[in-house]
Amino acid sequence: MLLIASVYATDSMYITISIDDKGVIDETIRFESSEQGVVVFDTYGMDVIDAPNCNIGDELICLVKNSTTIHLRGDGKALGFIEHTQNGEKFTFGIDCPENTDITIALKLPPHARIVELNNIKQVFPDAEATTDMEHIVLLWKNQKKVFVEYTLPKMDLLGVSMIVLGVGILVGTGIGLTIKKRKQAKTIMKFLRENEMAVVELLKKNGGEMVQKEIEKQLDWSGPKLSKVLRRLEEDGIVKRIPKGRKNIVKLLI
Image (cartoon, rainbow, N blue to C red; front, side, top):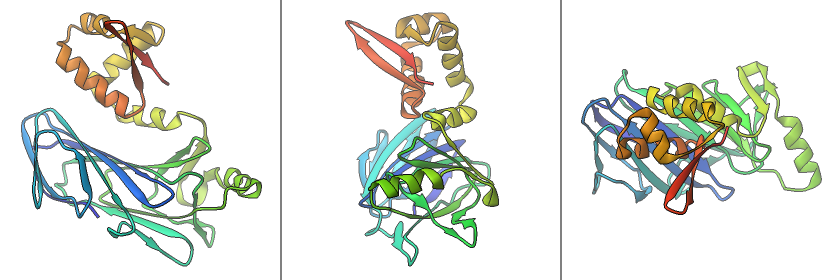
């Protein structure tokens, strides 16, 4: 469990968690603030892969100026995020932060994992919006401080693949909608984009989904660093991709 010990002047957190089939967790946390803020938290044994503007010690102390993204990685089973149950594996995650902090948690389950169902109830709490790309199920929670999901890792044979496909549908009992569409996760994330991120997306749509980065900068009348920061967030969310071409960057809309 990741515990945010104290947060000052931080408006929102976007937490993306991926679990592989061996239980290794990759986690990115993006802190955003309308003014300069400080975040202090315990990583609970997770390795710090990248943490700009942070002091790494017993606690991670990060200066948040507009936006800061950190990257953590660790063994989910050894650290207690994942526990073995009689039905499969159970992942639990929780945070402690001020009530006015806007929180989004996106969890990508291991390849071909299936959510455990007991008495016709999917073992996901609280209710989540869910999507799949036929390989991973992705669960999305908004403004929840503690979440869990219980899942299984079937053998990858033809029968297992068939069961995965059949098991992914509309989960009416718990209010979880699973839609089999590639890139649906990115479309879901679109609902939570900030105003400046939407400005870039709309401009790309108007220009056929592809533009030179400098041209975006010119049309939006932004500084280079501001646009780069927004594009980096959109890339992390799978919305756009920057493609180097000579001395230019081509920005391509992926959804």
